[in-house]
Length: 313
Image (cartoon, rainbow, N blue to C red; front, side, top):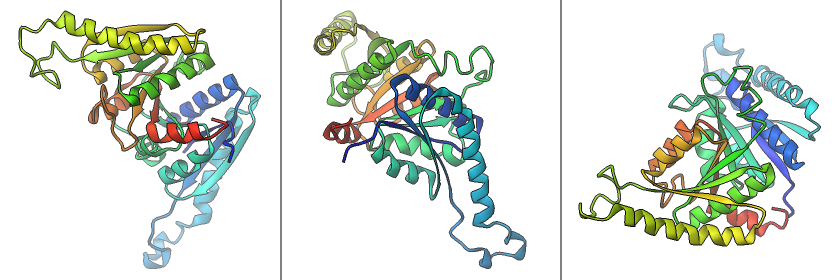
């Protein structure tokens, strides 16, 4: 099956999901893809007959109409961009619906409120589950305080990706992330920065066992040499892209979160089981998603393999 070049985006009527829609529409417009907007809903598994009469008004028809109204608002929001738009109202758990639909799309986009925790409804489990289980790369778009500022809305946060930062540690997963980051840089015409973190100065973490007299500068130099080998190879394959490199003292979560304040897109790799390996370990992945100031592109090895197997991807 040939996978269509379409961006999938989930909306629920919240401001956060509409910002995700703006990002998805901007990307679709940039690369000439279509846009598929989905609003899903589900009712409790118990039936109205099992409840007191006062709850009888909670029926499928009323909720379905509300979902249709949300979808209509979303379609109207992007109607003037010259992007081919398809809208769907789906029944079922939002995370499950989007994961299933992601198998027929090249990119999935969802939003998060970005206040240290995920919002409920679409933006709760969805923005956590979708990146781990999607069949295509996923972009999680944060909605931060001040994002409604007229000078920022649909501007720096959405329409113009000028700087992309990718976490690289030499693992196969991070190399997948680097390759996808290059693709994004080519699509947006953006600057690309590869970052590797070594937690030396904190006295904790995976390198805490190193002797105190270890030459930290030499460790950083060795990591830099390894990063150069990987990045040089990628640059040779993509001569139009020049990749800046940084090897810094600090954890992956700290560094990528810090860089996110000056970047327009962070790219990270994942094993596809809800956690990251190498530079990004366990809870680090959630820390990046929770605290990043800019959108985060998550690509799992599973979805990368599926995309590579698809001739259209």
